[in-house]
Image (cartoon, rainbow, N blue to C red; front, side):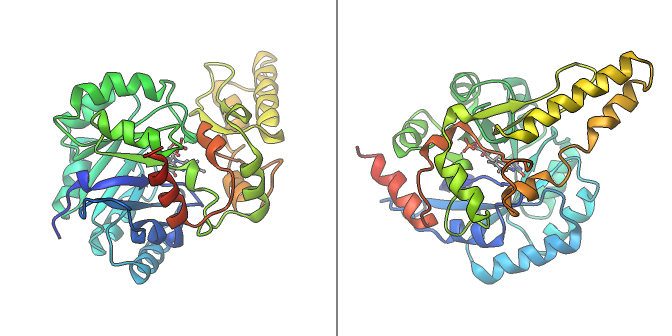
Length: 326
Ligand SMILES: Cc1cc2nc3c(=O)[nH]c(=O)nc-3n(C[C@H](O)[C@H](O)[C@H](O)COP(=O)(O)O)c2cc1C
């Protein structure tokens, strides 16, 4: 099947634990209320810390639920990256979204050789240009308003820096802080081939999120999210936007303790890093699936202000399209 990335007007970004086969299939099966028959929605499977056999089962489940195009998100530093990619090749996954590290040319070529399209994330113009140089098929420009791991530059700045400069060369999908239809329409009018939303779909009926966590997300506003990062450059921490809770305070406390130990000569810089290294391990599952609102990780973007009730994927999409005409 010939794939044109520009057909995917609405993408639901991969969200670890949230974008499971059920949500992915619901998005890819959704009907866009558009006059253009080639316009489609795209679901992206999150692989997070998945092992190859888990990915194999997840893809089988997606295929059982939809015959439409879907994508798989691969995290660059996954210890199983090569095996996960070979599972994608076995299943002839149509689109692979590469996250977390700048993909090398060989990695992009490998994906193309298996007949799939490769999409990468850009959080700066430099990264976007490197992705193009390495042969990427499409770029997701993601601003710091987004939920999950983020760069520091706002979507509005990236639109001017990236979209306005490269949309003629490669399809650009805009992500980060998008919550209403009017904004989506403006992004398309500015040259985006599509938009990617994550947070707006977390409370969808088809999302596996725990009911208590959904109820909390529905109550929260943009001001309730914070970017959590390192308090000292000795630590290597990828900043992440989450709903502020006790886990955030504890993480900062843990870093302060590690610095104290470092200053007292009880640990070296590596030891201090190790003290905080596993802090968030398993915490997204606790927050999203088990409903631990205090000590789980609650990744969410500023667009959480637009999450006001639980609706089906199809209802969310229709609402977004209705807002385009208001
Ligand atoms: C709960 C959550 C988990 C996420 N996990 C991932 C992930 O595993 N891989 C990834 O590439 N992006 C991840 N993201 C980012 C989304 O794919 C998407 O780009 C982002 O949510 C868009 O911004 P928005 O939240 O403002 O809509 C995650 C976002 C959220 C809210």
